[in-house]
Image 1 (tube, each protein chain N blue to C red):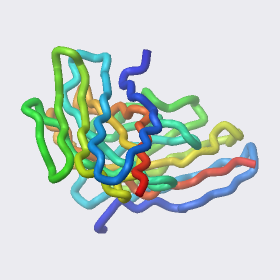
Image 2: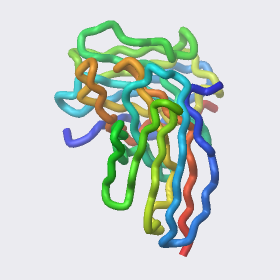
Image 3: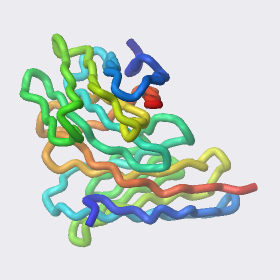
Length: 116
Length: 109
């Protein structure tokens, strides 16, 4: 597609439920990133995929968070047993990312998650 | 200390003014630098990369000072449409980028 697509755009869930957030990156972009942004705050890194390499999971805040990227394209971020502090906008980005050369990111419009 | 630090502002300037933002980073091994803008309740969008020699894109000029570990963004002839939050971004190891918390700019008529 022309841009990074995220779904759903909004998600309201009850505390304790599991949620899945989806990201469809720009075709041909080998690098994919998940960040989250709480209201009025900066971007917090969560996880990074680059090609077939093992993902950098160093930003995941707890073991309730996991992500996968299938076939080097679509990625799913899963949050188990959601808590109110998980409420935030979850942003996915992709880039050409070819190892030593760093390219700017293209972000999706995000998923606004509200845990009630 | 945060890896990337920005003055949060807000900067309130009249149309036509020149405004400059600075950003400092802590990791001397950092290699790639960017400025993004983020409009209210929208996703960040890449504004420009920052090169060692400095670079210009229309009314925007970005500069890098490796010795002092800061980057800057200069906006000339400010427009109302420049009102946004400007994010400084630093990449150290070709992996994840670290975002500053942003500087808010409001341009007033």
